Length: 176
Image 1 (cartoon, rainbow, N blue to C red):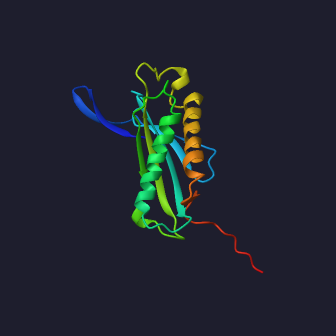
Image 2 (cartoon, rainbow, N blue to C red):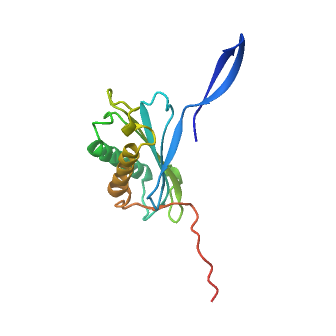
């Protein structure tokens, strides 16, 4: 997936509109209960990157105030990021957007959850160097480490939600 930028070229005194793709995304494998990707909206002026974790959550127990549970989960994720962030690469100001609708959460029903985290590179970090290009191993491993930390600290030990990769569970019909 990429972001499109509409621009024009002046060729022989005629304006020609072209579509330029500047954004990029890539998958991070190794997660059984979520789809994890990272990307940038501008790979030409590479100043920021986002990490996206998509999963389906199913409540483990009944709760009276799901809004409070979702807000606490979002706050806990921010604390995890602040404590584990590689401050040599990223600035401390990050944006965490947990999209999980409290109004739709109910027992025996899966709800879609989308977590997007925006990171900004520190001034002076040259993202065009081989070690920090968009598809570089170092950048991918750094983001995978952050995603694993979020899973370990905030999702795996969560007392309220069980995670699923998809909404439907594929069960085999066994004829007895």
